[in-house]
Length: 388
Image (cartoon, rainbow, N blue to C red):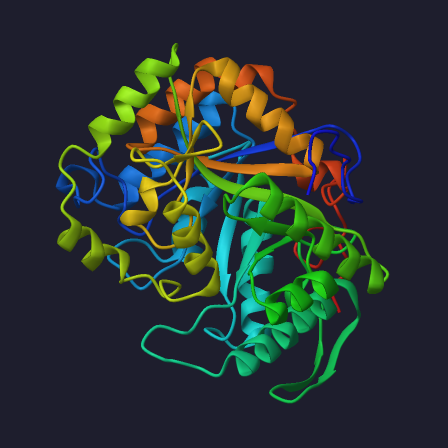
């Protein structure tokens, strides 16, 4: 595939914008050295709140709150606690479908959306429930049904749903969200055909992990076509790590520093804890790393050694501000409109990125851009609607 004259794939947001998000490791991975659990950066409420508040102060528009069965914070509990301590940043809360009774999940999310006054996005997770190995087709079916129930709850007068797994007939007053025109945006990632089908039919942003440009562009073309076949359009997001310094040499030196205490056996123990550690997406991260040079680089500045420690996103951009910006502009040319960055440790790398890169990006809020948050207070049962 020749990407020399790249053309943006069909997307929902044609404007050249970039929703710039940071990452809050509420699941125990914040560290100063890859492969080590850092006792000074435990995922306590206080530490994780510090990360959100610093990201907000630095100007990030969004922050990802991940989910995992590890020592740390429960997503919805933590998000509710953090809601009154922030005023601008959007919380991207990861929700694994099947964990909570769907109508009560809709109610919890509506409560949180009101607490945040619309600063809520959902990252739909379709991995195995902790401690289980489930039939993938069952997971895809359950995920699709939960999403459809949520969307009925947010957009109709009643939930009237009859599927293979769930059947409900309920009023929707208890579950109306603060956001309008469809409720909270849904972000979704997954490599398998089943995951892609669910995203194309229901979700708003397809999230990807870093791969070669050619591989990502092929996936974007496929997903854009799948969404069009459903009569829809979607946007694309990239979850990726980053190290930026004044010079490329400094950035690469810091990458080597991060790996200076790496122990392969210990790293494998940490990596295997993730519910997604055996997924097709993680396998593709492993395949990318296998093509890297001796220091772990592909495509000049894409560093893959992070995947030796963490399942999930295993790559990051390492370079000078000009190098990072050139690569991000290249990604925007392809059609990416949302970026979720992180670094090690989280607070320090957020500051480097905010100083050297963030001011040069067209940073926007996706819920506002897509008219989910109105200029005036919306009419809902929890604001000023007539109570019945």
